[in-house]
Image (cartoon, rainbow, N blue to C red; front, side, top):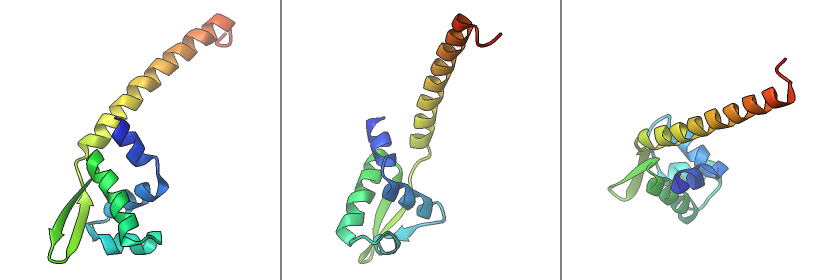
Length: 102
């Protein structure tokens, strides 16, 4: 979960995921719109790859990137949902306690 949240915490990495949702791209294609060097984009892609969001493959002299397994995002969604339900339950009890729900 830590790797997932860390990967999603950066707007550049979220932008990479958004771009890859349209289809595969090379590191150069990802670096250009982000205004990053190849080394800079490699670091971001590496973080996304370790979290399971991106798969990369060497194709000739380039590295092709594509979205990884949706399972990583599903697991994060399940974690958020369980915590959302817990918070809502606590807020419902608090509202009953202070009489706001009446």
